[in-house]
Image (cartoon, rainbow, N blue to C red; front, side, top):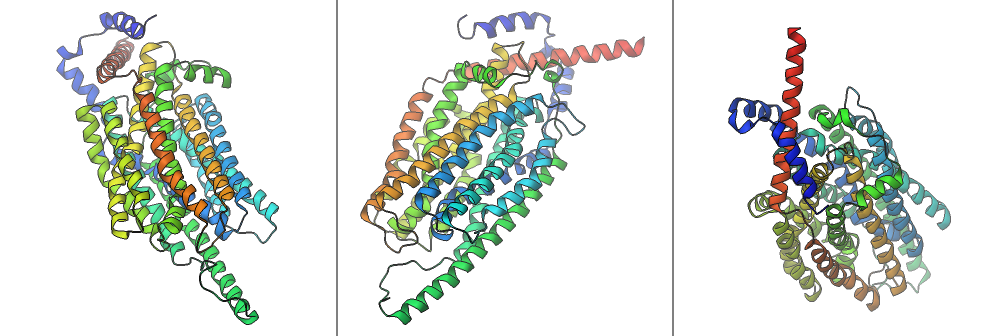
Length: 525
């Protein structure tokens, strides 16, 4: 069957039995009112995305340097923690997705119980990540590996149901897009908050670097310096723990707002959910659907580019640019710029289409990724580049989550008899991106070890400088190029998307009218 043929047959089968709602203004208004999301509901839904991004920004920007310079793990052990933790996180996504798809509806919905139960346990494990145990290197490796994996698993139990919740807050594509724009705005703002909390608290307790012009040949000087270094390191450890407590409090508060402010809608798919799929069947389902594969592969490369930048930018600012006291501020400028530009990108994709927004928005970052390695420790230029780069970061955040519902809708149209697989599509998307993130973090940390990285040194070898430039500039530019090339084959155009919207809208109206007529007939009898 040719692409789109299934949609045409489905439309032809469906539409003759559907009342032409365009001729009945009262009926259209009734359906639109019932599916409309209030501003309060959109804001509460958006707040639910904050925990994932706040903790993610703290871990993404600070965990690598925390393991190397505060916990003082060897780079090889740090790379194991970062890679295995993210790989484990990736594996748990489809697992939780399948479990969510098998869950029964409760009085709170199908997604909300997962969010509520996982929150307190996730918060506890998150705090334990930022504790430095007084044990040997191997025991530290096991400590961080265990609690990092436990936290990632519990956060997955929050984030996968929350991501799939997009399909259940409203059946209307326009309402979902609007709620997604609110969500992306809050999520980018949450990265600012997470970076600010972690950066401001930890930034005031950075231990002095080792190297410089210190004369440690005298035994007394060496003893005084070591004592000062140890005291400062203890303050830094305490600062990381305090920051984790503040972030955990925000995590819990956001989960409460989400639960109290959002009502999960069952939708017409609820009564038609197919039998639960096995892991292999789910993998075949998503990998066999070409629009989904092309969307995921395209954004996989572009997301990987920004993940490399995120994971290594703090080290780049400290050792290449020499901004040890400014890197947290530069990160906040990037994210604040991204937050302010989210409304612009929502307008842009509505006006010019989502594929055009992808090409324009993500390509925007390329010249600034090149400029950042060409400037020589110019603080003003670094801040200006950060403002410009933040605009592209916003596009990279908004567009994948705005386009994923379009793929799910397209799948429903192409496969009208297959229902209840939303969580599978979302969980596998998160799986692929997180696995790529684990690979990028592991490879980048190993690369630093091979280059001769020295923990908490004032000056790093030239090979480390070169490696960091590659990780934050050359590699991301290449990955963005590959992602955009793959995205050119993405088949869901604006015309196809609008056609799918009309078909699904007519289906919902038809079923709602049938239910109303059945209720009225039952009442009359």
